[in-house]
Length: 238
Length: 269
Image (cartoon, rainbow over all chains, first blue to last red; front, side):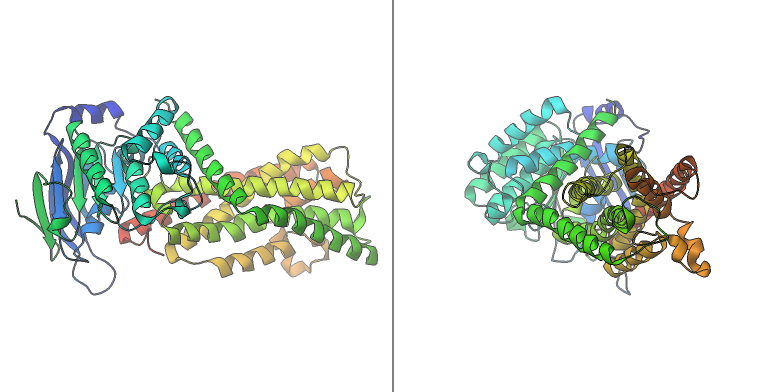
């Protein structure tokens, strides 16, 4: 068990002021192995409480790498990632507790577990207190329209249904930062509407949302701020 | 909020996950029962062919090798199965859940080892019960004390699994290395035959790993074999191996994850 030098109260203080910077990415640089140019070159981005930010860019532009750095899955080769007093390298557990992450594609689910088992499992990994876990799992099932599939094994669900489960996991522990990589993937109209509502609700409670997709028309709702990522650099478009 | 309770709940969540997955493949349950039964039967009949003068135990070679089979089961699972399991987690993307969770990747991987090891211990108990009930192995009155020793031995074996898992995370494959190591341990750990039969030039290898003292102690407690050193010395050896190897194993595991996080290869497969 790693110790954390910054407490949850410190994070609460930072997050309490609406519109204050929550997640700060500064001077991020990432280069994959080989003689290729860096996929991220001095990228800086500040996400504020209640703000919805969209980043677009062609395939391979570095959107997923940026989200993974923000989530703490990857550690910066140069630059910093900071959530109030927390950083992924020095306060990993406390940092990740504030993060909800959805990866692109359909990976990351335990194929033979049922939906409620999957959500309960994630609630445990996210250190959701026992007294709230059952309530949050039931709430997630309802909010993401999963009642009909709650007892179904994930490998017996359609791609769109699985995407709802993956989204429910990203939102379940009420994170302060939501990082969504192509969240619309495989969703039908109903799923699209649900995702819209959940993003707006999360922003309403002060979470900041960063989501990426290759094309502007994939945007779930109009973001407060939009960027494109190209040649390793972020450019604001709105 | 104390971190101990959420940590325990997360670990239990991983054990529960792996139990659900294990039970969902029903043929595994049958294989887990039949596999040991066939192994025991095989060695029971082989032992009738042998006059093992170097084994001083009421159970003869059969009693000696049964304990070796129990240990090999635990070793195979910790070193053979664990790297493959972690590799499957990489391929299926489920390791990402650990990477983005408060529980974290190191704790997550430690948790992934728990169900297979508990399963191996239960399987070992089943083997002993079958050997005693079906094949008439005379278990010693001290047999029950072998359970905590087996637990201690399992903890002592875990660092070797950490090292192999670290290799999987860094280089994305290690299965051939684990098979090679398990086979080597079976020889120098005296799991199928006493280490006194080994030539002098290799005998040292049986003293520098925890498998030999674990096997010797368990045999002594289960089937009354004679110990070369007093039991307390064997026990202290096991504890010393844990004290030295466990932190080293965790450190290597942590370092391999950090390396993957810096280079960006942590989620690659």
